Image (tube, rainbow, N blue to C red; front, side, top):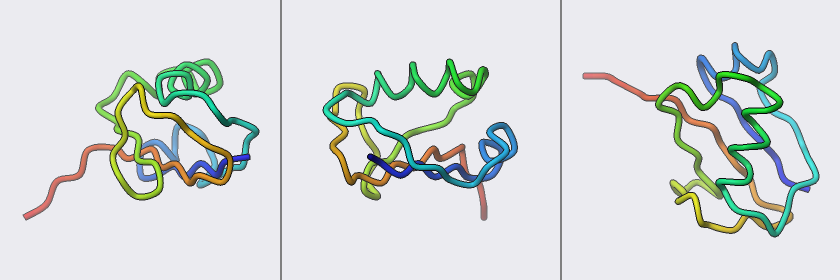
Amino acid sequence: MIELHYFAGIRVLTGIPKESVYFSNQTVEDLWKWADEKYPGIRNSSVRIAVNEEYAMPSDIIESGDVVAFIPPVSGG
């Protein structure tokens, strides 16, 4: 099981701030496909995925117990 966190506009899109799902030994790309099926449009923005507080590449493997965050673009001054 992994824990997913949704921030800012992604939280609005999903309607929840976080959830736990059974998902392990699969890639970040696989997670993107799963998320886009469950929450259509989540991939259309410039959202990045972080695994255990580090930005992840599509080929990175997600393991049981990982914490995954969907992070929208952030701006500031």
